[in-house]
Image 1 (cartoon, rainbow, N blue to C red):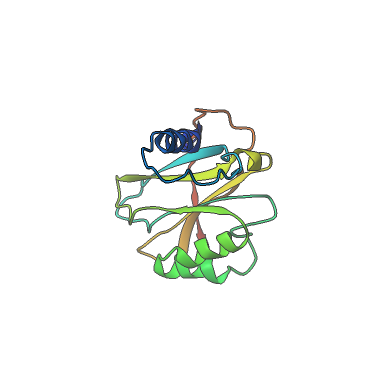
Image 2: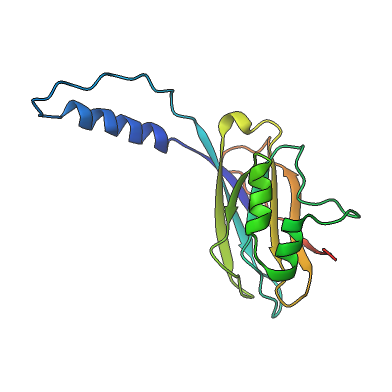
Length: 175
């Protein structure tokens, strides 16, 4: 399931900081006021990954929020080093690093997901990035030597707050 929730935590924290500064009782002169930019309004996507396989653990999941210029993979082309590393060993860090270098927002699952279990991974993006936003979700099928399952470049730009969608993914060979 993929859902989007707008958050305002940055506004709340910044307001609290101003309140605490106003309550200072020091005899020192007040520090100069600096004009900081307004907080960036963020959108959060919560991606719940449920392992519906029989006896097939999944590696920690990589969630990547990106624009249309980036692709985790394209069928029929050679896998990137990051995708190959994930598909062969279950380590998603190189794939996350590749996506981050391409200006994508990324998040990693907490750990392997055994059959029948699930994990929720959250990724935040600036609201200004929502037009044209794509979401990719990738995990290794652990009991294989180079298979992965993915949701590749799903267009989420028109999703509304609290929308929920369910997708079933297929397996790919990174070989």
